[in-house]
Image (tube, rainbow, N blue to C red):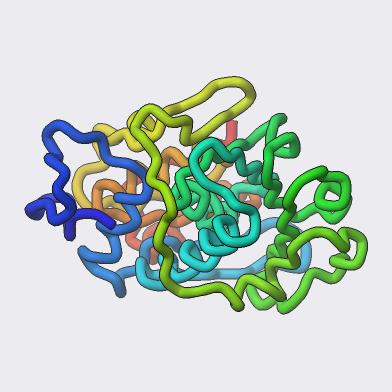
Length: 259
């Protein structure tokens, strides 16, 4: 999908001096660079059934989740360039692989107020899935879920926990996005594929970045960290006293955006 490392020679025919880095390239570079290194670590401090969860995904495992979700989007929903995929989820580890899957098929990630109006809806709300007029995926947030407990309330939706595992572990897109195609749409503001991966000054190489806040900002910051051959520690719950945790995780930059 992309060159083996940010500082290595390109293997996909792209000149890194002239071509923008696209989201699918970011995932490919991480897998080629070091497939076993943790790239996404999740902590859930939100009160409720998932409180206390810690999930860690290597580049290889993250790519596996992305491939399955991308195959579902492409094969079951005919998603590709020009398709909008609404991600109606909190800033959660599952939201990140659905965004990467959407970019892998060349479609547009929609978050915010317009998410539920997209062609395809990825949501944890049975009511939203049932009301959606197009293809819908009902997501269970708990890590070990085997089916959504309210899947019967949205009989037309794909129960992700039950069905995602049936899709392939490798993905080949039918069409690739152009740099000018819309990658991310947030409340009427569009960002092109060629503009959504932006380096952050001060993070340096291979940063380990703590994230939370609105989903669109988490997606942008995660892409920036991964493009620098780094990783992210994504937290939910609004706790402020996380310095000991971040020290144990080797966090080098705190980019949380609760405001």
